Image (cartoon, rainbow, N blue to C red; front, side, top):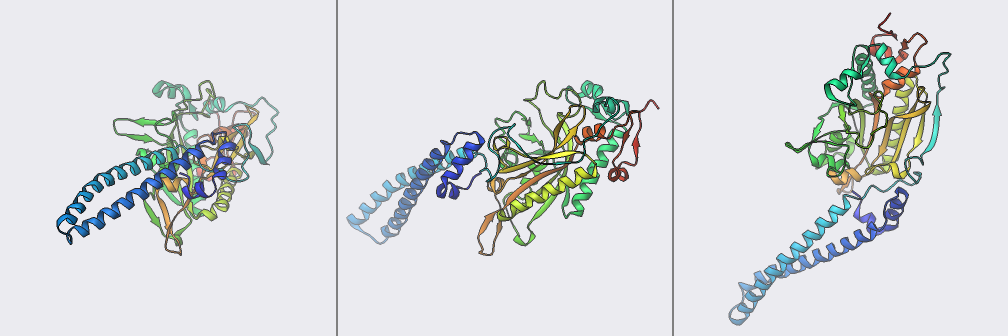
Length: 421
């Protein structure tokens, strides 16, 4: 949720943000009008309530006609106070409801535009050159006994799969390596819930009533998370944090669930776009003035993981229209996928400034003794999709796959061999 003070003091900043996102900037005028009306209604209520209290004290000291006049005025005021309170509450509710639909203010420097308007910041590593026709991850996974898509579909439907044998070992090794890196960097490891309340989902920035990507259990009014960012963001909801503990950094391991409602016909082959996957997610609470540098630290940890698995990748600065509701700035790390001849996203890291913290009421008490909202940031450290890039980039002519050196202690193998051998 955006800061009302920022809206009042610098409405042009929100207007500009809406425009670079490709959103309607007229919402700013509506918000300002609602805010002004709400404050006027609240002032009216407080003025009438003060008069009501004053008359209440005067009645006991009055007598005769004066007392009757005061009683009549008190009766009038009771109705006026109730009406004023109702009006102020209704306007506050309307303002809050509209605020919940307004995305975070984009950080200065983020590229304007939509999904295809990103800026490439860096390319790292050499793309592999094969002297044979490279296989895609599905063919490799099946020959290695690592991925079983056919039985995944039989058991659960399209976009589900089994990781079997070395595939399961590869994922567990990858996520364990990611978690170990996070621990060494000072993160607290977490196994998070995958079912959350609607207020946790909405507080993180998801529109539960309109988001077609989210799985819901209506009987329990719970939601399956698409990322452990959600339970980690809500972990300190309604709390005031010790400023000396900031930044607080958590690494959450969870299964994640996405309906992929808008992806019909896209990535139907393989495990790039699926309904269930596992992920290790970094999450940080810090002071807002430190969030830009914290964001770059999360990106550096993502790069460290990518270099451990020896993948060629690039970093893109995501355009404003592709940031999502909560992010003010987002960097994606995309690995080279040989079978597709292009880069595909493996990780992303977002600076959500104080947007989520305002919704979830996560604050810290500064030296001035007043509570201030923290900033929240997130970043993926490893996920199931990495298996695609690892298999394809490290494949050999005989169908085997070399395990990256840093990953070998976690997988327990140097090379993944085809089952037919």
